[in-house]
Amino acid sequence: MSDYHDFDHFGLDPQLLAAIKAMGYTAPTPIQSKAIPVVLQGGDVMGAAQTGTGKTAGFGLPLLQRLLPQANTSMSPARHPVRGLILAPTRELADQVGDNLKQYAAQCPLRVTVVYGGVDMDPQTEALRKGAEVVIATPGRLLDHLQQKNTSLSQVLIVVLDEADRMLDMGFLPDISRILNLLPRERQSLMFSATFSEEIKKLAANFLRNPVLIEVARRNATAETVTQEFVRVHESEKTDALLMLLRGEVPGIGDGQPIKQTLVFVNAKIECRRLARQLQKAGVNADAIHGDKTQDERMAALDAFKKGTIDVLVATDVAARGLDIAELPYVINYDVPFKDEDYVHRIGRTGRAGASGIAVTLMTGADERGVAAIERLTKQKFTPRSVALERRERPPRERGDRYERSERPERRDRRERDASAGFARPPAKPADDFFSKPYEPKPAAADAAADKTEPAIKRKEPAKLAALLGGGKK
Ligand code: AMP
Image (cartoon, rainbow, N blue to C red):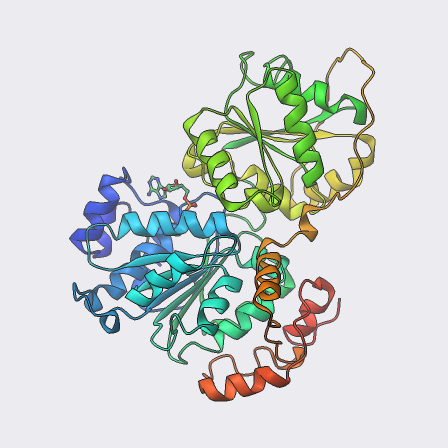
């Protein structure tokens, strides 16, 4: 596989080259150098990309290039069928990928549209019915639109599973399986994942045909541009330690100046609200972003953060997944993530596309095992620091619903909508025939008939994922 050092050598259309030039891309990133030629040749790809390495353009540019022969300015929806489908785990990531693809396609007549849950379906329905060659979607909302016959996937040429690991984590396997069954047998398939589990490998084995493995960094690696620090604190000192970090008062971390534009990760929604309030009381310009906020509220908080009107955004993993904030200098883990892989994703919010960043993790005595797991996963050894804090009496932490992970905005949205519309969600196929015929499109009528007799979808049972994917045992 050859590497290309500038965008001119890929044979990309001048309309695409002009668009990326306008975005300030001068040289391709490593994943782009490797993925663009393979995708242009029509090959399937398994992409193991570091977070923030430019993988969106790695698949987005060649995808658009391959669809360009069909680009047209006709007003007829029939002339704009879906040809490229990108599935993403969260609304934020779908939105972000959509923004990028829209910019890449800005100078050509290909239409790009984004659909995700948590917002009104009508504008999405309108866009889908007008026709769009490229659709970026979260799985649940796409199934809703397919069920309502707002779009069809029968002419898809290229499908991309972006952040496939997270889609499996979020329990989207049944939805993905249903969507894949609606795609033509002959197609190009691309899959990207920052981390690799056995389940991901099995999904790849079922979904991809003779894929080219493109790896630009060690699996489960953290970006080399990110300096990682661990700070030992007592549970009751966490907020004080965080304030010291934000003020630039922890020796050896940062340049001694107050830090701005910091994403602070916590493990639970309730913690997210509590901490944002505490920071505000301490005079910090902070806001919270978590799954209980409406999509509009989340977008408003994110926009304010990106513009710099908010200095500190306290976030849960679900809400922050895939956020792309250019050159975010700091990420602070107020809580050590429950899942070691989330550490890689969290700190991937900084040090993106070559910029340097600092990721600081606060750890208490209870976090030793969690940190050891992160060390094993990322093949690093950390030397935690201690900070001298003045011990103060703190109010006890609020208790309650700790786990954002249990919250599933898409499922909630759909359940709520289904309940208000007075109908039950169509049940899924029995677990054991997922992927048994991954490339066999089913006639729509047979699919509908099968749906009526199927048991209800049981999502989010990680232990069973291996079985779903081919009988592996945990
Ligand atoms: P991604 O990993 O696709 O989310 O990309 C991370 C960030 O890098 C985004 O802000 C992209 O717009 C930016 N980016 C991607 N490719 C390039 C490139 N070749 N040159 C400069 N910036 C890029």
